[in-house]
Image (tube, rainbow, N blue to C red; front, side, top):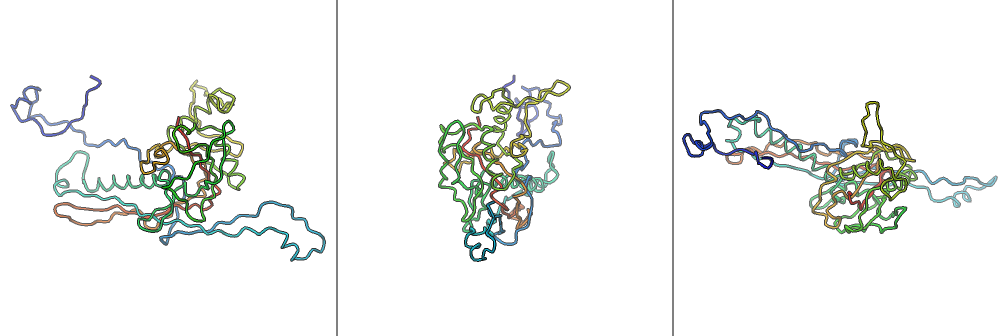
Length: 371
């Protein structure tokens, strides 16, 4: 039957026992267990893999940003004095010093002596297998803190780096063309780092479930425009799997009015073999082409952030990867802690931080429903 559970395991029935006899099992038969282990969990780190890598040399990783003054008329009278000209000009922008604390990330491994000694299907060395598994998990944990942790930069106690959201200025509010909604109130659990932020916040809702909205092309255009006006040019839109489907559905819809069934003026691509392409991978906006990238971590509930409806499917990133790097203070490494009784113990550890070279080159759409 389709509803049967085919999971197996446990001790084999003894020869001539009722269990063996009743199931016509020959106790002398060898079990048929394939010599491999199938792992279905995703191990990609879409955001971490999209950005650069750099080196941190201190617990507080710092860098500088600069920008040109806004365009204005530079006309002056003939023979004007330096003092008159200087006093008439606005103060020139000066370099800004930014920083982010490093965060220590770790996983532990404990394997008994017996487990290492027995002959196991699919595993040559249980300790080595667990180290590899924990290392993959750790990279996913770092991805979670980068995109879904909603953490501020904190240098005391358990240090944390400020993730993507730490570089967005929430005081800049935008509304949808159809309905003016409230700007998201910064949750109590999240505090932007001092003298940071400045990124574009394209926000369209409050924290309550009833006010969350569906992602539209207008949201993306608004943020793209603001980033362009800041001097940047976004090239990636990163969304949860649910919002990825929403985006494709809106882009492919035949509706012609924003806010109706779709955003209109986008057609399905039908190739010479008659295949219909539902997915939209590149969106050609008024301010440049942007690649749409799904990130499964953005669809995971973050139970520590109650003020954001657990943050599942809650936000979308609009950014240029050139402005971000992961600054490594200590690369991922295994620390052999030796024996603990009859078990061998070890630790996977790494330390790093997120470097946002210029926050004005990134934007955030949040308050999304994923529907």
